Image (cartoon, rainbow, N blue to C red; front, side, top):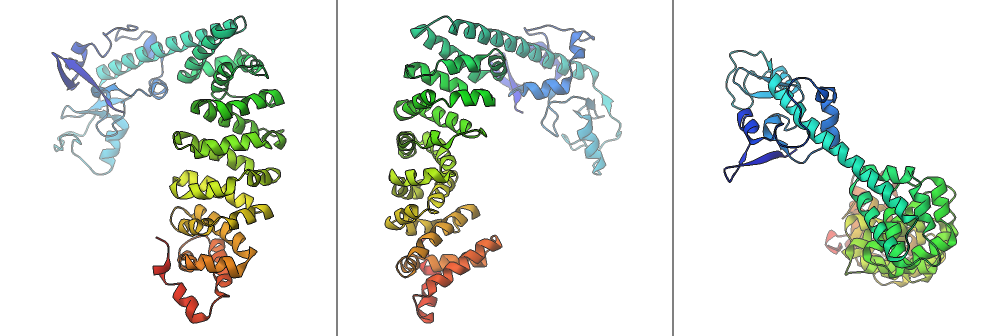
Length: 443
């Protein structure tokens, strides 16, 4: 946790001691809710709870233990005048150190003295911050309730503005999300989605819903055809932010036990997702788009539709430029469609499938290697003589030897050995051995 930087006499400087801190007014005298150092309501607040809930980015440096660099809850002072968190300095002593960690001075007295003044300052300062946070939280929760009431009455542009304000408070304040749900906000927002809803309204509603906790009833309500149709339309035509929110919402709905796969068996939905994944102007849409495609490809009924829209060659061409996380998602999708005949044929007809899969082997992660190997196996089994030869020519044999000799999963090594054997059937022993030289491996 970073320390607080104070300004004194126009010069930036770190708060170094209690006198400086008190004079600067940052330890209890400077605004907010005031508390004296003796007892009072502040003492009823649990310091540990306040520190954890506040998680402040800036804390006065005098509150920070030099050992843990975290705020002190039980500060104690050594004979050198340095102060530490009790548990930290006792652990230091237990390790056989009888020096001051900060100054490295030998200690002539290893006793520790509770620093009650500093403890009170810490407690008072965090109490002020905590109560300010609570008051602000209550204010925004009240604001959220007021906005929900307004939404029931207004239409047109006034409704759009109310939704924008609700989105702002829900996005910035976690406490308001629970309030919105408890006040029936999900039902109200869901009712705004329909066949005649404008994209201006719909995009705001979806951006709020993806931040809320949706129960089964709410998810089933949002699965109504008219609502899904609107979401898919916005996924095709909305801003990049709206498109990403639409993918998140659909993915959330797919987690419901009663989810019907027909909802995602949509040509328009899959086309929109591929556009999102391929959009070079907005790379932020790549990951959420692939993530939803992965979930959809898990349903066997939809795999043929994924092949039919021409997604296979597009995904294959994207592979070299994807980051590891996106690459694994894309490989999962391609591996899923390779389980159907149409998927195998689409993969084998793409000239870059085999070279790109060979490149992945042993380069990114074991899971990516496993997926790429599974795809290669599916293709090579179609026509061992044709596709195995292509794969060996681009360095597959050498890569398979690397997998076999690595510490990978035994099943993965076994699969590699089987594919290596399949590839060797097209060559004499001497020629195949030459093909296995590591210099043949795609770099």
